Image (cartoon, rainbow, N blue to C red; front, side, top):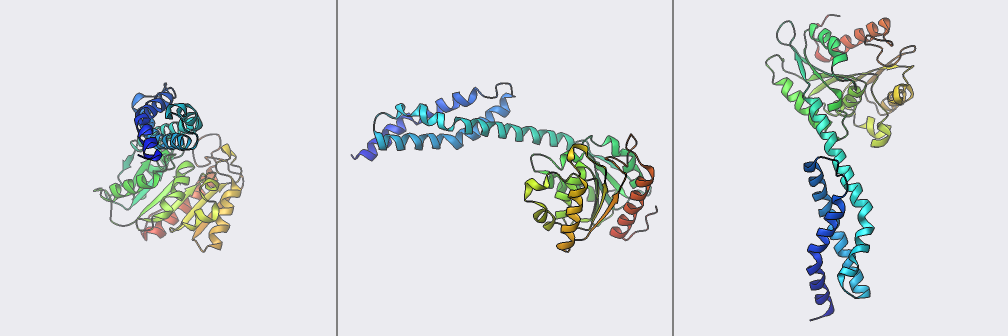
Length: 314
């Protein structure tokens, strides 16, 4: 029997020991988290890193000789930071998914006065559906079946917002309150960012995207403006508050860059800038500006009328 076979058999005898040692070490991390989430994350990371430790031990035995157990501590230590980071990322993703799922459950449907209407999806900002409820009621009064959704469920850290929006649209179109045809998506801040990221890429089901002060700060992290706008396939109407500095989420320079990029790529986008407006200028509160809010509403109803070809009143 050659050295290679002897070495492989010796390492195989230590494989379960390597698994156990790695598991115990990773288990010490994240003890404050829920057991089920921690165990699932540990299991996935263990599958990833145990083969790496085994290969490390094998290479050292082949090179330097000696018992495999001699090399396990060093090989394990070499990957521990990565293993812990793996567990952290998986648990963070699990938490983000749970939060987004909870946000999705806040959906509120508003039937139009006539009983049936084309579908308009209204995506809220970071504070949830509450602040946009009155606005959504006004949309419904125009004759549209209006679905109010927490925008945090769409522009979500787990990056499953696109799939969720597909589900929401399909459910809305199947409602007895819905008339057949494509939908319109209106988003505010976080919801506006979600509409840009996902509704713009759904031309078979979305006729129009309208974004109020949309979050754009994430675009640099997902390939940059040219790549992002290159995915646009739906006519876009965007409103920007020139004085908006809220967490640098929705800066005027970013949306202006988007407009310039859309023009260069021949993508249909209209941008209306309100020079004296600040974040949330359409909602009651310290930054509310009635003239700007009324003007944005008129442009919104015009855009809906154009998208649906209906006779919605202002």
